[in-house]
Each structure stands twice: as structure tokens, then as C-alpha cells.
Image (cartoon, rainbow, N blue to C red; front, side, top):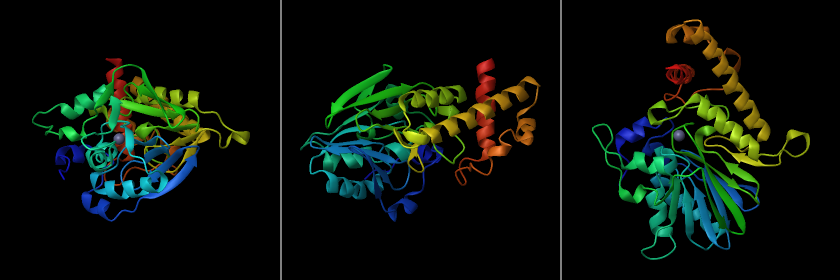
Length: 307
Ligand SMILES: [Zn+2]
């Protein structure tokens, strides 16, 4: 089994080493309707399973594929027909090939792997800093429009492109009958938003994407429950969690914008701690994404937009 090029792994802001991954257990959480959430290492996997087979959103790491398949088999005897990658990062795409081969629709057939075309473009780009990614990892059903929809296991599944958010190839997946949204890393409760500027992300695009998610979600009584939201990393959420996260990012964006207008440098902005009142609730990703990296990404994203 080929592992992903070290450089892309290093570039992933959430990726864990293969060593950590090997001992990880995969846990399944029934969400609602046909939808389940699989927690392991890397990003959360969303699974829709039923009489037609399985649809998998994000594939974690290749090393976890046997454990993910074992959990899918408990829910359906049928193969994986569809996969969706919410974005290019290897902790969300690492299992693409490993999950396709042993568990696809039939001999010589692989599942359709849907992703925005920018995911494929980034995976197929090679260069001095971008080693080759095996073709078996690539999406084979890319889309370049605002949305793509399929009908599977008796429900409409709508995939929306979210331009320039966490990266430039983000998709969110809406299971319309089950009433569940899978967001990828646009939404990571409890963690400072990761904005991957090098891969086309932006703070404004992330806020726009969070607002787009909020257009799909409808709360039940007392603002709890209703539409459920599976984040890129972290616990199962509902609309109020997304509102809180969107508000935090919007407020920090406004504060950093003000400080930039006052002529402050990046260092001065960091010292001013524009996210101070959120520092107990949000943390970084240890060793990979700190508060200051978040502030720097917001600063650079806004400075770029002003040019
Ligand atoms: Zn990511």
C-alpha cells in the first residue's frame, strides 16, 4: 500500500502520523435517518448506508480502511457505491484507494469518488514541492458547478461547492431526508478555524460557507436538535453550534480588519490578541495550528483581499 507523499502529509494541518493511526479504533455514532458518523483518526467520516449500499464522505487514512469497512459491513452487506471528498487534505482523502479496491461495486469496478474539480487539480499537480499522488487516490467524478446532486438510499443527497473557504475545493454534503449536513473542515467546533491560504482558502469564504450551512439547518424546539451537523473534526453538532462558531469567526475577522485599518503590523495584531475572549473555548491543533497561526491566516487573507 502506497503512503501519501510525506510533503503533502506534512502540509496537512490535521494529519497524524501513521504510527498513531495504526492503533486507533473506529467508533460509529448513529446520527439520524440513514446517516452515521465514523470517528477514528483524521477527519470525521460520514456514512449513509441502506438497501442501495454505502456512501462515504471523507476517508481518513489508508491504514484505517479495514476498520472502517468492518463497521460499514455491520450496517450494510452492499458495497460502497459513492464516496465524496470534502477537500484535498490527506486526513480526509487518505483512504480513497484503500476503501475503493476491496469494497467497490464489483470486480474491476471502483466507487465513484465525487469532489470539486479543484481537489483533483491539486492532487494531480506535480512539481518540486508537490510529489506525485497515485491515481487510485484521485476523485473520478469531479464537478465544476455550484452543486451536484444524486439520489441514493431513498434520499436526495446534495453536494454544494463552497468557494475559497478552508481550501478552494471545499464541498458540503446535505442529506435532505435524514436532515444531516456534513461540512468538512469549514466547521471544526472547539478548534481555531484552519484557513489553508496556500490551497486557496480565505476567511471571507469560510464565513460565507458557514452562512450557507446555516441556510440548510433548521433547529427543533429551544434551538436544539433538528438538522444535525457533522463537522470535519470534533463532536456531532447542531445549528446553534454553527451559529456560535460563525459569530466567533465574524467577530475576530472584524477586529483584525480594524487593527489593519489602524496600520498595525502582523506582530502588533497578534500582540493585541483579537480573539482573547474565545481563548478558553477554542484551542489549536497541537503542534500544527495555533491561535497565532489562525490570527496570521486571518490577517493575510484580509490583507490580500485589500490589494
Ligand atoms: Zn482540512
